[in-house]
Amino acid sequence: MNLNGILQNKSAIEQLLVFLFIVFISSILGVLLAEGITALFFLGEMTDSLSDINNVFRLKIKLLITSLFLFLVPVLFFVKLVSNNTKEYLQLNNNFNRQMIMIVVVIMLMILPFIAFMSQINETFISLLPDYSDPIVSWMKTAENDAKEITIAFLKMENIIDLVFNLFLIAIIPAVGEELFFRGVLQKLFIKWTTKKHFSILITAFLFSAIHIQFFGLLPRFILGALLGYLFFFSKNLWVPIIAHFFNNAMAIVISYSPIKQSINTDLLSENLEVSIHHVLISVFAVGILFYLFCKSVEIKKETF
Image 1 (cartoon, rainbow, N blue to C red):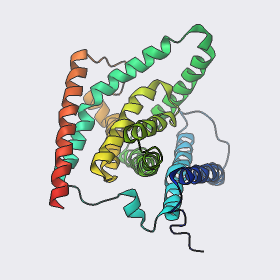
Image 2 (cartoon, rainbow, N blue to C red):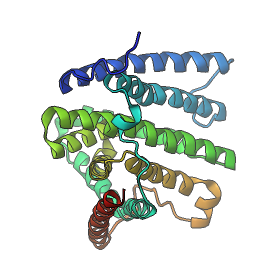
Image 3 (cartoon, rainbow, N blue to C red):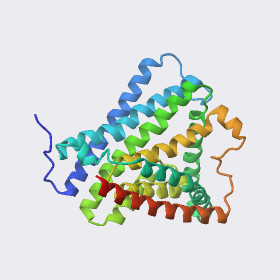
Image 4 (cartoon, helix red, strand yellow):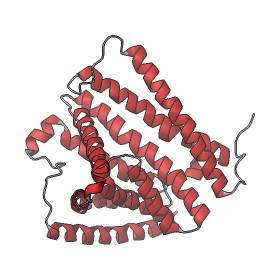
């Protein structure tokens, strides 16, 4: 049976509902497959301790499988249903130049102080929640601490093999999978459905942040999601947010690599790292200028090609 393009003429809301159904089924299959594979290959008694190297590797394999079935598999299957050309639908264009990529990389560097500031505001806001919300805040803190412990365990890298595997698992897979999912499909469907471009970019950014279930990082991740959304919107090229997303994640991984971390002698990823208002203002101003230059480079690119 040929499934190519059978949903091509359906409305945006119908396509969205089908996509969400595919995501639901695929994510369940992913969880079952991850549990089955890890149970098959990790025989013997396993502990829940994150100090156990075998247990951490088992969690990494589970993350790899569930990520593929949550983000990548549903997108590829869905796009097959709505288009006869996967690459064209997802706007995976090869028409980009070095100037554009360099600007994107510098944007991701320059936005870091602003992101750190947003993280501090996020944490302050949660601490100001009223007393009756204590159970909710307590649950948020528990979820955040659990996620933080897993992240710390994942980022313990003693050799180059650990570094390469983490770059694949935490940088390449999320950059490709999440951008295909959120910007390549969801953002596009929301724009088609609502015809409101900015609203669609922002609601996609919110969902991008919320799905990570890390509430103390909700605001900074939303800002990053919005930035990635606008990079895609103006460039019309999904490779642009994929590269930006990869660079953002890869930078955190490389900085956490033991030899590099020891040479820096500073935890640049620490939440307690204070950011002055001057750094924040410089960050916002620089990103604004760079984004303007990015838009100009996109116009030049379009004229060139």
